[in-house]
Image (cartoon, rainbow, N blue to C red; front, side, top):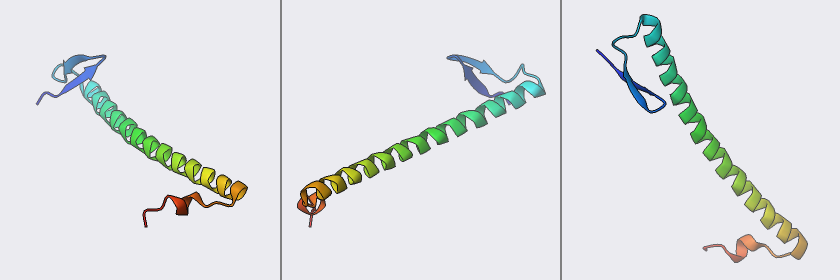
Length: 76
């Protein structure tokens, strides 16, 4: 069964590939999947970093002014 893969926007079929070529296509797919996972992980880490920065800013304001912004803007 022939599978499709793309290189630089051009579609290819695995039909004419040797076993080594098919193995390379498989490794390409594994690599692309891992890159996607890492991209998702980077987005998660960036979100966490931004949350830590926001919390630190509130702590700095609290330390300088004595006002706890977290309680001022709480939903309770």
